[in-house]
Length: 287
Image (cartoon, rainbow, N blue to C red; front, side, top):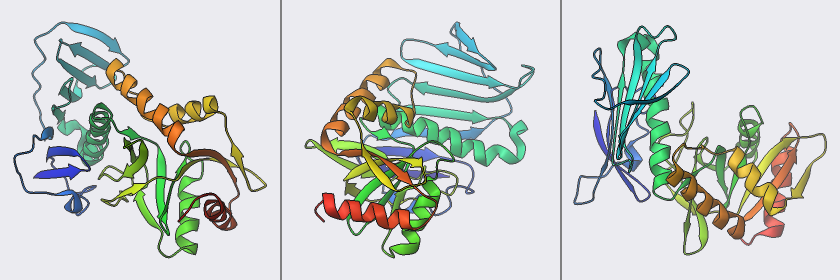
């Protein structure tokens, strides 16, 4: 299948093999092919792999990396190094990304397709000035905010409380919303890559705040130093290996810290947490 997608200002020609994680999730991002320049993101199933004609750069665990001035290859083997599981080729400006999956992945092929295409889409987004953050991004009565934290921190639980209490709760992206800066203000947009439940909306909203979740016994919202804000953001984002991407992230993070509220949300496992946080938004931000 091939789809032409517009994810905010990122244009992608996306070729994929399975509907399992995408099905109707791409529809709202689809556009007709036009004169825009599309980045190519392609996933294929292949039982033969042609190794790159450049020298091996380094090896990490069961992955072997090859690199030229403008391109990179990442080949992942089985742990005994007898078979290739997948090979990824991409240009360093992310205008072309090709992911080849081996049939040995069997019933996990769709899962690998979703995970790896999402990983490299996020690198493409970072290259273009977006910051993907591990968070659930909610819009409730036009307040837009992030509930962020590592896996099992309680993001999904707190998101569920908001949906139970506030009927107009919209989940913009449940796993990797994209933050960007426009006219010195902070915005967020959704994308089709949004975690195992694939919950997202193709909308753009101005952001009020980020709340880093901390499970506690008493409800409280803490102010943070700028240093702590930056630490928590870096802890909860995809951290790329290329210097240019790291520099791009640093610039966006600096703007985010200047532009919006960033807090620690000490929450409890009860819907009272959602009401408490919403009251905080009402007091501190104009609707």
